[in-house]
Length: 225
Image 1 (cartoon, rainbow, N blue to C red):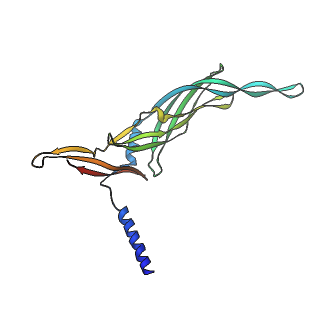
Image 2 (cartoon, rainbow, N blue to C red):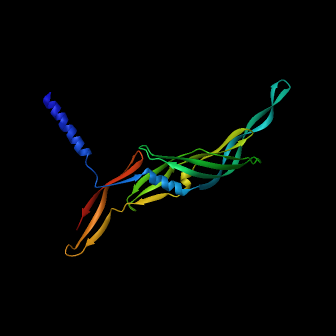
Image 3 (tube, helix red, strand yellow):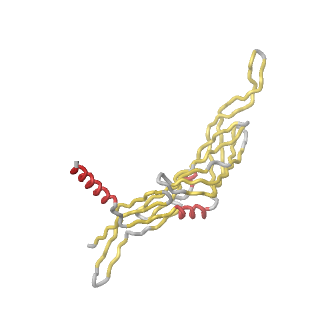
């Protein structure tokens, strides 16, 4: 049993030694940095429109018994052309291991032309989305973008909610929204007496999310002809 315990301790020591190996470079970006950026964005306005086939209600008379009719609501299909304007403000961003969620305040005005009827509605949609951070090797930067922010477009007709579309606001915004430069890869020449050209390349770059911050790690390789 003693040799089994020694073997187990040896394996654990190897694992700890391997996990303790640090990358050549490490840069942490705190959640506060991301929050400062989304705060300075202020109010973001987007708009759009489209058309879709939808069921709509209309008032009619329904027979309930013999010659007795009562008012009722029936449904028919109609093509709806719609437009919308939305504003998003007061974004609050977080960084957690599973992603970069954010919340905020929203205001949306939707109007539609449905079979000669022109209903409109102003409401406050839920603002719950995801930001994203990725490493881009060619410009050597961590790029922050909005990954998703889905908002429902709808109007109200005769007391009924009429769904028109889902819109991913993220697809209407610039990508990336913010880029943090980390120019580790480079090439330079040392004058005499060294007189040598040296090239630095980035290897194994990685962006990892933690609670409250994200971490960029990489190894650097130095070569010379």
